[in-house]
Image (cartoon, helix red, strand yellow):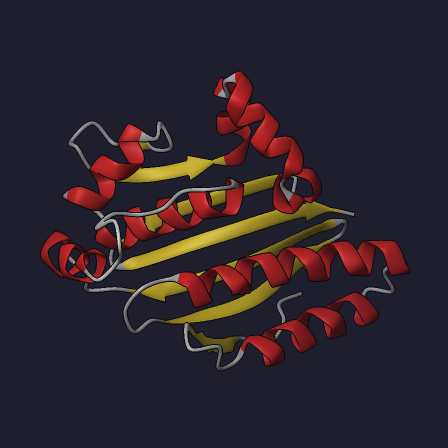
Length: 187
């Protein structure tokens, strides 16, 4: 089953609709109250991240489910390059990404994917957050792999994260000009 696709923007437009769509999926799949709340919390974290992204951005949000696996999707199409990203980051106080907390790191990964090459990739490599495709390109990131390689302070951060606690997997990937984040939850 695939839910309706909702268009959301980083000005907040569409977020309420995306959360309603998440609630509708929970009702349709007859989830327990606890499982429905978990799915909604994941959707809130994911859509809230979009509001924190710089520049004008629109993304598509939807949920796919097959048996007991729920996948929350967030996809954007970008023509962003490293020069454009540099200009966007120049308006920040520090001139670079701030990565405090687990979802801030996931946001940085998503931004690195939007920038694909150049500084965005470099920032993510410095944080130890990405895989390379061997050509200094960004191929993807996985929560499972991150957990396997996490240092003590990173593990403490994971322990405090709603997404890291509730999600079974989080992936960020690039296919052409599409950047997609998928949060997977088994219920």
